[in-house]
Amino acid sequence: MTAASTGQHQYACSSCGAALEFKPGTSSMVCPYCGATVAITASTDSTKHDYVAYANEPHTPVETLPPFTVSCRNCGSSQTTTALAGRCQSCRGAIVVTDDLGGELKPPDGIVPFAIDDKQAAACFREWSSSRWFAPNAFKKVGTTESMRGGYLPHWSFDDNTTTDYTGQRGEHYYTTETYTVNGETRTRQVQHTAWYPTSGRVQREFVDVLAPGVTVPDRETLDDLGPWSTAGATGYESEYLAGYDVPRYSVMADAGFTDAKQEMAQVIEDDCRADIGGDEQRVEAMTTYDADLLFRLLLLPLWFATYVFAGATYHVYVNANTGKVIGERPYSKVKIALATLAALIVAAVGVYLYARGHRSSA
Image (tube, rainbow, N blue to C red; front, side, top):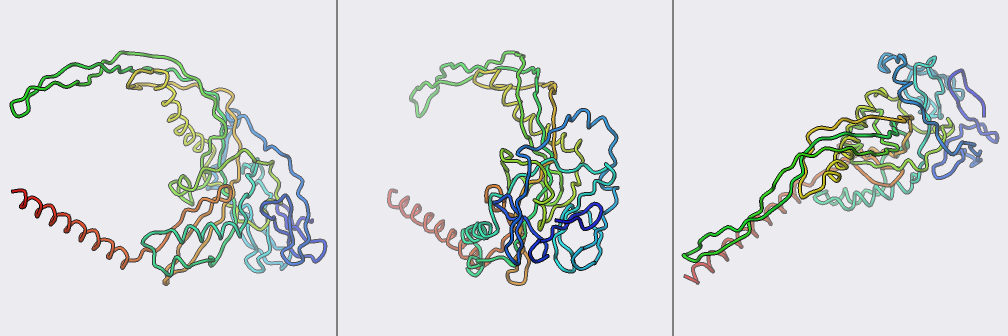
């Protein structure tokens, strides 16, 4: 394996000279032409850092950092890119960038390995596409994608030991008997009321690997639907794992990621407060949270993404390479929707007719 130039790597096959690529589901790189393999030596754990110390250092906004300039060892062509890994635009050789721009760019600390390979991802897509209601019949027969590519998405991960002081109210139900009259008949029923009592307390929670996206594409809603990823098997960072895959540079700074993670943690902490308050109902009026032992790392999470063409339109699909979950765009059959709507109207009309007929008979 040889370095192509300063700040980048291309890994050459010792047998045929072609560019090696990482093989999902293994700890090896493989030659796509002759099948030769090279083992990757990686630490079992990724490094976590003191977030407070990092946050107190000056950081250049990532959007102002310059792009990389890489030169392909195979064909000699050059290109500029902001990606940490990708392929040569001319010969498709795998290129991995290892330049941190003089310390301005935070390098990854770990990688969550691929648990789903490309064949399994394609099978997940076929199962997903065949189960789409109101999709055209031809769409459900799509068995392969026009392109299935692997990649990693940067995510910030945070550990936090939180202590939260809260104030609120505990609601306790009690019942009174109410008398009422129906058609001249006197009846009674139990009516629920809630008595509220002021309360306060303290709860503690240890968070591990709360994830916040380091990118804005795919959008947050798509990533939330696509997740979660399990970080339990995260390894240390080795650039060989990126060979042959698309890896964007993070576009969200760590401080914005921490703000995002804190919002997620706050939802869990509020549930803890409610459990601590007890009673039948709870109101949480204020929470003050203190952080301790705050650690963070930049993780790369695996996914497969596909582009397929149907009826002249292009659609995008993402497969979580950690779990196999599929999220994507799909076409709709106007004919099927129209027929379903018509069927619903017919059922409703029949129901109204039968009701009216039965009402006339009883009269």
